[in-house]
Length: 55
Image (cartoon, rainbow, N blue to C red; front, top):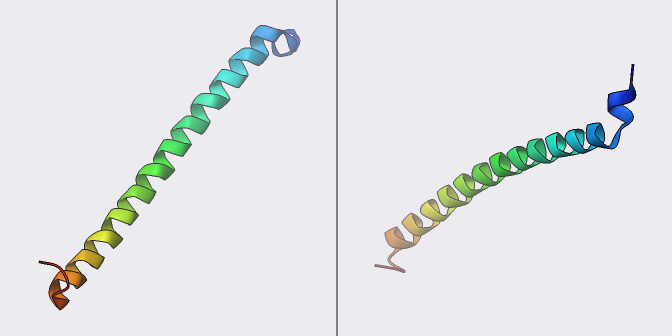
């Protein structure tokens, strides 16, 4: 009954599925982080512009 899971093909398929899921999760986290860094950079630049350091 568990023969497909113990074969190398089954393990390879599970490893490929895990790799895809980890990649999707990493991309989602990277996008969220990039958005947050962009917002912080925008606020910092707006503050510097308001003070007169730049512009």
